[in-house]
Length: 315
Length: 155
Ligand SMILES: Cc1cc2nc3c(=O)[nH]c(=O)nc-3n(C[C@H](O)[C@H](O)[C@H](O)COP(=O)(O)OP(=O)(O)OC[C@H]3O[C@@H](n4cnc5c(N)ncnc54)[C@H](O)[C@@H]3O)c2cc1C
Image 1 (cartoon, rainbow over the protein chains, first blue to last red):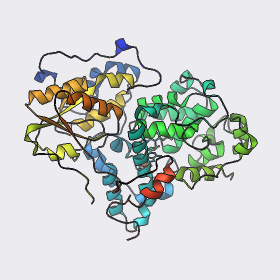
Image 2: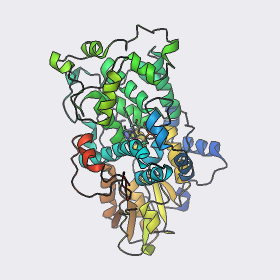
Image 3: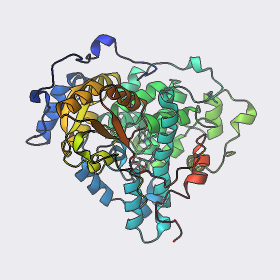
């Protein structure tokens, strides 16, 4: 599979042992473990390079039993009301859907059975549809998922974006408490709320002027639900190569949907990089013709565009 | 429920199942149609390194695998699947569908040694017609009428 960057040198890729003798039972890897620690130690020994890069293991458990327990806890009506807030009742089904431990149809059917009014499922079903949509695009374009789908709408030359992830972002030492916390969560838990993914992606692409591909590859290292279709096309949507305009946010937006968790104690409050109205931020970040800068909200009533318009409303 | 699972061409006693990372469900179409058939998962070493998959992702997958009746191996996926089929005297490999281009190329590679039957996972949409994928909104205008399975949003 071709990836546009960060391909390791060939000598680090174990070569296929073509021509080896017929497989022996001792080539079978273990299936029985005393406990989770035992399994983790075994996997770390099987993949020493991965373990050397980062030893974190997520609290989220794999497997069908864990998937069914997570599914049983889904509350479609509460989801619809609270999903945009980082403490909201999101499902955490991402990894199980990613690996097909559960299918979209199973989750949808479960949701329908869990509510009295079918309309209570409509928000969740629409979010599940995003996954279906991205998978269909992936089936059509394949590795083209790594290429810009459309030109950038930021007014900047694509070549002015850095190819590599900056070290301070990878390490979570940017000095921005919100962004550094998101990086830590990504590395330690393999999960970020959708809104945190949007903010971190927008920060990287628009504030740091880094190519979306560098961020997408980084997310795929860590997200338990890391999936080239949903991930790359979401990054492209933020960057504006798969959508009509770039996604940006401001401090008020982040403060609202994190319930002040980072801003309340932030030493940069009132003067951070995200301070300002959307028009001010657009002028600072992009090189748009005046007509473009104010063309928000012209799109079809697509879910996330509507969300974005709401986000942009100063409170 | 609109089940789009297609049954494989024959009973499964001459088949092995290839389990891959887009379908780690005991109810996936291949494992369901061939209960008791030998099944294999192969860790794609090249992919793990190329994508720099983190330990937490690998642990999640391993925990999912040990709940499935599969033999776990590592190496070159196509070569290992073909060798596993030969080991069991199988004349077919059954597997679940996937949108991934790497999946397609592995299937082609395995097919040089043994035929592969790709069984679709139950689709989200009970609809096989045209969908405009240029924007989500265009897709959704059509898809929302088919997204509730047998149920309709308004009954
Ligand atoms: C930059 C960026 C990268 C992303 N990378 C991934 C990724 O690698 N894998 C991935 O599955 N999703 C990705 N998403 C989409 C979304 O953020 C996650 O699916 C969601 O946050 C997972 O958490 P959850 O299971 O609690 O979601 P919920 O909100 O509880 O949603 C339930 C399920 O619906 C699907 N879903 C919900 N929202 C979306 C969406 N916007 N796009 C696609 N599917 C959605 C997911 O399968 C999710 O598990 C990304 C979004 C952004 C902005």
